[in-house]
Image (cartoon, rainbow, N blue to C red; front, side, top):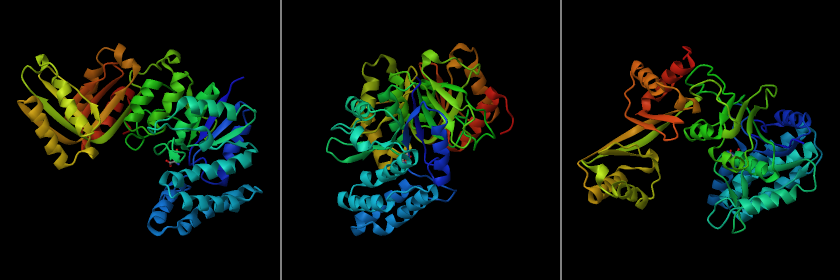
Amino acid sequence: MALKVCKFGGTSMADGHTMTKVKNIIRADSDRLYVVVSAPGKRFSGDTKITDLLYGCYEQLKTTGSCRQAFAEIEKRFTGIVKELGLDFDIRGVLSATLERMEREKSEDFCASRGEYLSAVVMAHLLDAKFVDGEDVVFFDENGAFDDKKSYAAIASAVSGGGLCVFPGFYGRGADGKIKTFSRGGSDITGAIVARAVGASVYENWTDVSGFLACDPRIVDSPKRIKTLSYKELRELSYMGANVLHAESIFPVRKANIPIVIKNTFRPEDEGTSILPIAQYKPGGNIVTGIAGKKNFTVLFIEKSHMNSEVGFVRKVLSVFERFNISVEHIPSGIDTMSVVVEGSCMDNFRLEQILECIKAEVEPDFMRVSENIALVATVGHGMSSSVGTSARLFKALADAGVNIKMIDQGSSELNIIVGVKDEDMERSIAAIYREFFGSDRV
Ligand code: ASP
């Protein structure tokens, strides 16, 4: 029997109407046994997500010692949902116990986690399913890292009785016994963890779009949908800002070769996008699978004659960044040159001056230059390595669009070509590359 884990995002959980759609999707396929839910998201543009309201509760709690007032909005949303669904259980009792524990624990992660908790309680009633609390089955170790062995064993034992189960996404319990959340959007990670723990044949991730698009639809009008994507391509694209799925969510399923399918709760008949392990993946005929970009990087360019023969040069430069606790994103290099790319948000002028001084002292470069506000644009696809002239086409497309390329980094896997351009040129660059490889003028 195929076993499916289904994770539903915030827009799928937004109100009673959308939750009914979720119920219908689960009922339509008896293989859909394990359900992971986000907190209710926005119902309309300008609305506030429950998780954001909960962070607001924590702020109020911190300053006034109570969050009763801010919590009133959350009570209203959940009592409204339960009424709309016609469910008969004591949601008011659950809400007041939740508020009482929030005020007692006074923890930001605990407050933030309650959206998923309440959402899963409601969904378990709606589906007449077992509620499995994240704090009993998802664990973090003393260093705050996800504890896979302990969590997989706990999930497997929680579902061993059989039947439909509902899990809240986004949180688990730390080694100190306190509730801890993943980073924002982390219910995707919980979904992947549950899929791995139960040995699912597929991890369905239900959202409000019909899969991954070849690039951001705010940049190109109606870009093509990607039918299949490898885990590696997904990782590159989500790291670069394609945000359908949390970038960390492939790790648990990748180890067990479990495919992920992105589906649309509002158009369940649409095929969606399948994300497959490389062994099952067959390129769809396109040289390029997708294009994504991210702004605000800082690039430090270093030049020194005979850099190539100076043992330890790169290590010494990188050790400076390590000392400042700055994560290095890319290190494109030439014979006598290297560049270090870091996120702009971790570099203020003062830090930058200090780092430059330290690098001067460590390696005595001939020349250094700093470029700020650089966007990285990644063109990703397994097809690129076997197609002659891909980079030539890409660079010509950028030249024709009048974009000045500040940096080039071709991953050694030949899965991607990353170019650095000025922040203000990012959209134009993505549109030009899309036009070249997907042949559309509708930009
Ligand atoms: N509710 C959390 C957030 O808004 C987690 C999630 O939806 O995945 O980030």
